[in-house]
Image 1 (cartoon, rainbow, N blue to C red):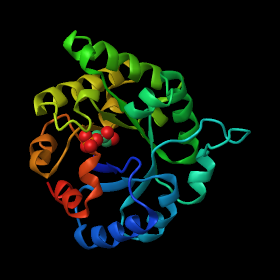
Image 2: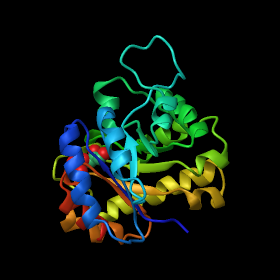
Image 3: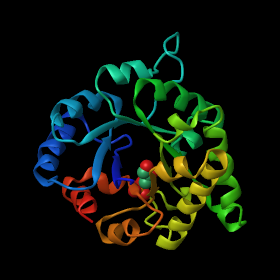
Length: 248
Ligand code: 13P
């Protein structure tokens, strides 16, 4: 049984004071629910959120990690550093990191391998750009991203990874993939996992949709058969909107 999981990705928004204020407001709004929730915040806000959400069941995630355990990598943060402060999740391979910061399928694979032994759950982002969808290549692109990300990873580890299907053309554009398009790709990703592993493992992996999810479209998206959750950008910055999405 896959538990629905909705995570916010704050990207490079919110100061520590703003994060603390969000946590106070969101805790009030997040009641007993069958949906798991988490906020993926900038590094400097993680400790504030871990403390603020202690005992609430609300998870905290980072948005990136370096794949080495330690070393001369100025400006980078290791999985052990995230683990030490109690981080639960880490986004890997977000399209903004692929586009602006040189993230590749190979570094994504290394990052999954560095996170999994720490118990931090990777949220692996995959998704095609507009030209690829217009050329009818979206499945080929996503299949390749998934296969490369999981290279050399055992099934018992693979089943812990959350996958977020984020079509790049639907991020921050207000242009949502239709629930059917999102559902079809999430279902397709599950068949790729079945080919890579088996149907038991593919059945356990939580697959989210991300791209312009908001309170107005959350119910329709979350009710789709193959979609287990959402990765929410803009609408997760507002405690009320994010709670409305969670209570879809
Ligand atoms: P928006 O919800 O702002 O479109 O962002 C989606 C996203 O990139 C989540 O990781």
